[in-house]
Length: 438
Ligand SMILES: [Zn+2]
Ligand SMILES: [Zn+2]
Image 1 (spheres, rainbow, N blue to C red):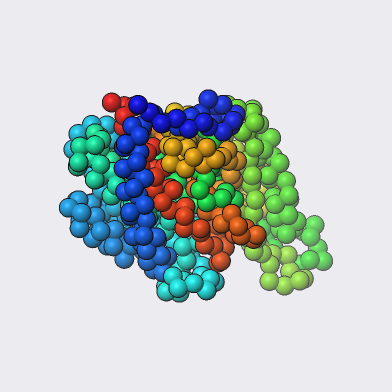
Image 2 (tube, rainbow, N blue to C red; image 1 turned 90 degrees about the vertical axis):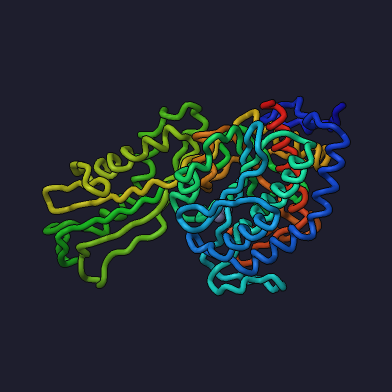
């Protein structure tokens, strides 16, 4: 016996998308269990929201999660980096991981709500408090279902620290064996562009690779009256800012497996040079990010960017201890510190259809929508290099509210009806994936 919900005509997901096959009685139990827990989950989200902790400092969050899981008789393992944890549920059968990131941002909380941040300078403005509550809730429900023998399989809860800092805590999870034996992974991220009650799904790249770029340029310096006697450093800096993105793009063209995904965005965020209006500076520092949805282009950027700097400035180029450098006979030097960031999140087709089907069953025929590729980054892509998985966008916008909030804004907040819906979607996706694996 199975429940079938007609799916939306979403080209990307397949027009035949329907609700996952599930015993209606089991579905009823899942719905009732999540509704029963939704008060605790909203409370948990608000508790976390009031106590945000930034990357690598998630000690109180980690302790609270550990205590809650231990109270259920579970044995969570704190990661060896000291924050974040992994908790296994069940003893036999296929292993599915559910991932939440737990860190907050270094920023002010400008909201006037009872659960406003009590930690000055830290704010859950990316919704990781919601992700944590949803994965905790899904874990508690799946634990009851497994223990009561209603379903067979194993679940690993991954509470990842320092997602907001490059290259991200996913690498710490993996280093501690967090993906060992895992046969599928699901996670959600809040999205205020989507209404609460909907899950935005996309097969293939959904976020971008993002790398930090830092360039130091030096020259002999001199008098602004006589630029011909020296290197006009401000002019060289301007050429890098204006010309480098185009040269990098030209070098990347043709490398992407799918030409539609070969775009590169190199954008500078800081430029610091000079101290006086009549002195040609001897030093300049530029920082920015370079992003692409394509993993091949992402890898190639490590060599494309230094080659492009050398081409723009007409210098030689050689690797050095921390990156690349180059120079010109007139005394211009540059040093590139190219810190690799995150890889793109690339959603597995079967896993994406599974969580979309789960959301349809959880929320009805309007519960799934298509979602666009974003130029942001997320560490979830590190897991997908090892395990098939899907990262979906959990709608958090209040349908009746006229203004639309954005992530990383000091006023970010969510329609908390997203919490039980997200929990149900993850529970059902895990059940579906375990069932499919047998
Ligand atoms: Zn964020
Ligand atoms: Zn985030």
